[in-house]
Length: 226
Image 1: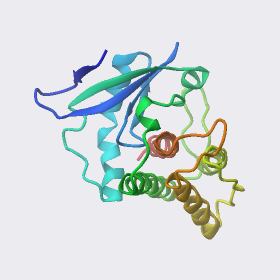
Image 2: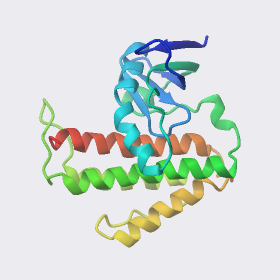
Image 3: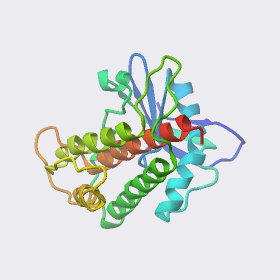
Image 4: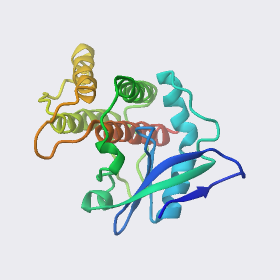
């Protein structure tokens, strides 16, 4: 059942979201804003976390040159609930929403690519401003800055395969190689080709890739004390 959840005020324009329901975790993801996706222990907590990240995501939209409504987090229109999986409970949005199967227009593909590219720009900015050693979590865990960079690049090699692209993980210090790596991924997002069994539709791929970039960008920001 669809419902509009108002998080503040009375007349906020609803933002379309879907909920991915795991047994231990729920993700709330904005369908039209790849990377704006947050988790909580239940639906309410996930939607509150999504609303709480709106200000951070506005920076990404601004970087992409795409207007982000000031009331985007004012209310959410829950258009779909999809079953989660072990991936959900592990901590990543792993379910494909119904709308993700719709083909992309050239304009939509360009918009998705701009938001993913802007996510990398925000990530690079956080990396450049962070110390090599980040604050540890309450139990002493967490990767340091350079390990996070390597992890993001490694994950993107796996994500690219879901788009039918075979990449080798670039050296994080090789700017040209990292740029080429990202260019290949952006090209695949708009290619509209079938990568075969287990492939990701471009809308979902953009959301997953941007979410992973931003999740770690914001982690770096938080753990660097910025």
